[in-house]
Structure formats: C-alpha cells, structure tokens
Length: 148
Ligand SMILES: [Zn+2]
Figure: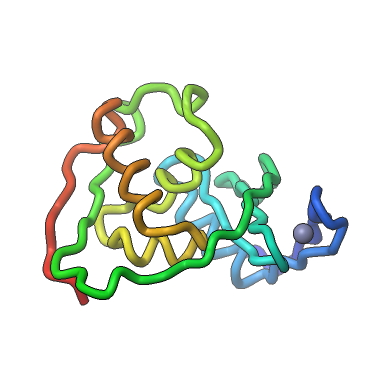
C-alpha cells in the first residue's frame, strides 16, 4: 500500500502541488488498466495534468489553459466511452497530452460529463477528443446513456 505523498512543482507558476497518499493510491489502481492515469489540479488560470504510472511514478507534468467548465444545460444523453483492452490499442505515443489525459479516464463506467469535470475541460472538447479516439481505434464503443 502506498502511503507516501508526492510533491510536484507546477511548470507554469512554480507552485507546489501535493498529491496525497490516498489520491496516489487511487491513481495507481486506475493506472493498472492502461499503464497511466492522469490527475488534474486547478490553478488560477491553468490546469496542471499529472500522469501517474502503475508503480506510482510521475511520468509527466503538463499545463493547459483553464477554460470555464459549464455543464450543457439541456444534455439529455451522455456518453460512456468503453476502451479497448490495452494490448489491442494503437500506441499511446501517438496521442497528444489532452487525448492521453482523456483516454486514461475512459474505463467503461465514467461518462463524458464526469471526465470533463475531473479534468476541468469543456464538455465539447472532451466529446471531440473521445470521438477522435474512437475513430483512431482506442475505444471499443461509445455507449449512449440517459444523462444523470
Ligand atoms: Zn500552476
């Protein structure tokens, strides 16, 4: 069981980010599926994406501009992206950081709105990324569900 916290310096504002042992353990658990998992931390005007591998190591730190996240008001249907098994996916190296961050959240249970919220990304952007991941062969299925 991992109980150590990790400290990461934000590459944009130099502020320290502390990842608690709990958060890290959860990320490691989820990274086992794809080899990576991404955590997002909101700073004033940017989001820090931290990639955790299945051993709890930090594989990368990236920042992206923070866009105001609004839930679509009249969203009737949401989408649950279902990933392909890791061995059937194309190489993860081909993906941009944002695509990789979104893909690590695709577990066959999490909806696009939940992914958008977790990564502080606009719903429309997450939807576009998921559609392109589907087109590129990373996802098995886009399941339509009634919005929560
Ligand atoms: Zn920062």
